[in-house]
Image (cartoon, rainbow, N blue to C red; front, side):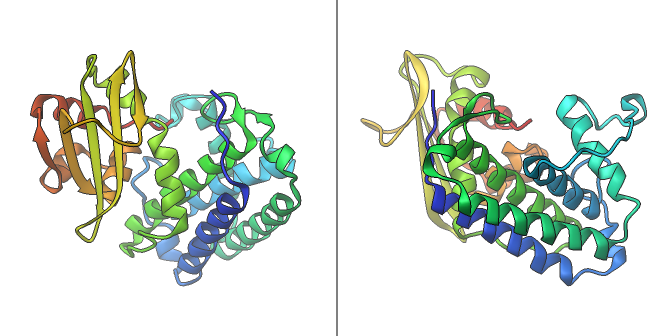
Length: 275
């Protein structure tokens, strides 16, 4: 299935999340840059280095010539992890202010390159972390990834923020694409069953996602009746569960379920679906 996403909205979301990250980083001291993040083996600086590495690849910049010993780094579990770790290890030789300078330089270049991209190039088939799709879908995934890493950094330094806005909306768009797989394949919902996610921010519902099994599980705009299971939880909890950033047991008290509780529990256990 080919996914077409709006260019201007997605590029604006990238600009927003990169600007928010820069605003966070300029206020940190060196000790805060070195604080461990929720990602095993990575501190705040490593998260920035990871974002830099992907944008460098997209700019056509050569990958540093560094060998990664996977046996010595248990958090590196696949080829994507190896690629990420190359840039992390390379930039560990740099001071935080140098890394921030590279981050600003590369993201600025990327925004300029994206602005010049034609709609035909934006909609063209491309590699993405989710398989072959449009280049625009890849950039939607970039918003998702960058926002998650911003939250990793914010969690590390205990400075919450950027929990609403365009980048969060685009992140939710990307997360929604996986919900049919989560409910149908991973949680094993059966024919005719449905699940609704009511996502909240400060108690107000800001996004509703409906999934129904009709031959196969898929996201739909609305249901014919009440969902088999309805899960109500804050956006930040949903995001962190989907990204495997927090154990379910630590946030279960923030989640309300109505209907088939057994199905709801299976869905909650299946949410971690990121690479």
